Amino acid sequence: MTLPLAAGGASLDGGLYLWVTDLAAHAPAPWNTAVSVWTDFGLGAFVLCLAVAWWRARSGGDAVRMARVLAVPVVIVAGYLVNDVVKAVFDERRPCQVLHTVTVQACPPPGDWSFPSNHAAIAGAAAVALLLADRRIGALAAVLALLMAASRVWVGAHYPHDVAAGLLVGAAVACAVSVPAGRAAPLVERLGTTRLRPLVATA
Image 1 (spheres, rainbow, N blue to C red):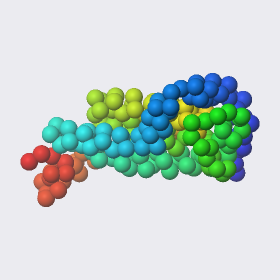
Image 2: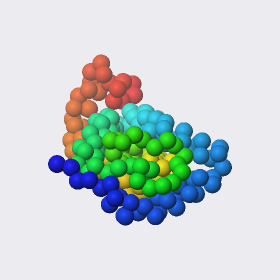
Image 3: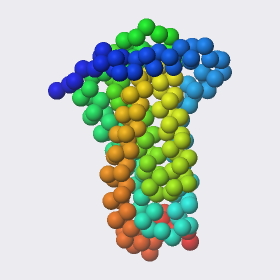
Image 4: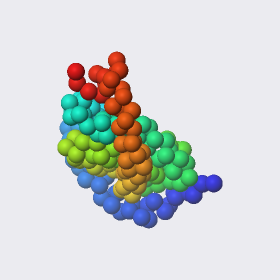
């Protein structure tokens, strides 16, 4: 069963979406290019954050922390899959297909639903998972997640409520997976006594 939101999305915050896309239409071209590059490739920044968090956890000697760091990739995949299920339930058309506006990026084709935003869900899942594992790296990741969500509206791909919902879905999945992942600390400690020790601890 699907719940079509073709017009409902526009009635929620279509005005705010149009205001943002109008700002983008009058922004300098280099700025819009930078935002486009970020929205297309910025998820890679979370991989870098994960790598730094893993490196810090190796020297920290905290098995719970390491268990949660190792769970981050699982959280990200789970966040994407759960969000895709939600997206299939709500057949919300892209705002650039419903509203007359000029967008920074080309409008996605019909059938590529808008609610919730996959980019925002992945970013939200990564940020909260990292925050639960490493507060310093997680704080940076949270800022990056907000920037990713904002960029999706700026380039015209999503309504504001799409990215807000995506962040919430990702955060919920992260809490559901990362918190119990800490219980795998005994397994991490056992790995530290095997040839896989470099994965979980410094020599």
